[in-house]
Length: 168
Image 1 (tube, rainbow, N blue to C red):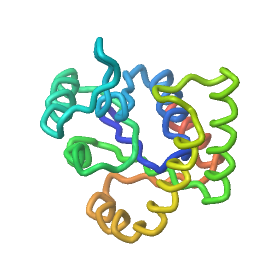
Image 2: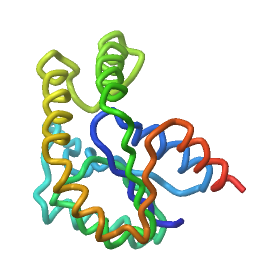
Image 3: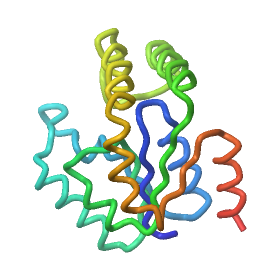
Image 4: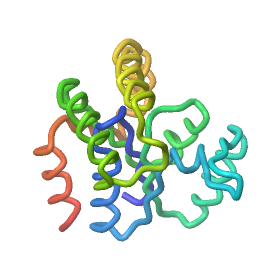
């Protein structure tokens, strides 16, 4: 595993797993959100699809990476570039609890984020989760093309088993 794509919906555990795998394997990790929306002197700016791919291709030159994020058409090239795709798919009820917990942690300053944690953002996170579930069949169809390099994790136990195997 040298090129790892970690996918999932909001509060699936993508960032946590990316950090842990990065430390375990010594591979740098990147949040796809920060590739889409990067910091400029004028604040956060959204890159075009072409600019996003340019950044990804530049990172790929190093030959080792972990990207984590949600599924976006703008960086589907990663499906082909990755040697391993990890889909984090915990139950919906767990993700809903994590969204609220994350919001509270961000509001009190325990957890950092790249956006303003307000009620509008909280509502968007729940809306994105609902949209994902309504469009899951399409996502799953696309994922089937990569079954030969897909690892699906649905629980913390699954994640811990993966980390134990990769830590050897």
